[in-house]
Image 1: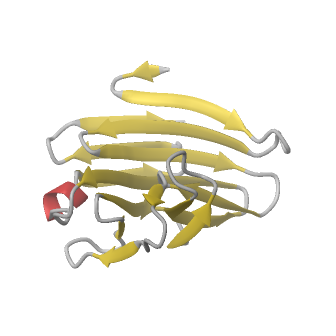
Image 2: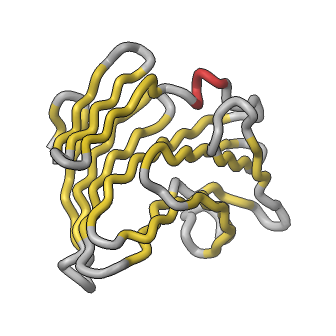
Length: 170
């Protein structure tokens, strides 16, 4: 469904229907804020990947750091940049190079976040993109003013910098 500016969907693994995802995307001008609830029957490593960044032959991915935003992982191929910022619940974020995932080139860069989920977790991730070599600004990397996660009621309240409030209730 798409209601109140939030795109929601539910999913389960085809190989294990007891691993369930309740996904909520909040579209942003240059990205998306993902608010997800994951339920598993036993300890399971969950990963969430950003879009892949195409790399032409011989090209390497540039991994950029941001002094502007803690935990921001940014990659660039010289033409495009992707940024991923784990805002809540993730154990780690990393960059990998892989093959066969991008429709334009065989080799691509990918930012992923990872969490070892033992029963149920709420995970919040900011995924951003931009064209060009100009670095992300602090404002671009910080569209979220505040987050309030209530694990008891499974409710997440997001206040964006433009003062818009979004409430995701699972």
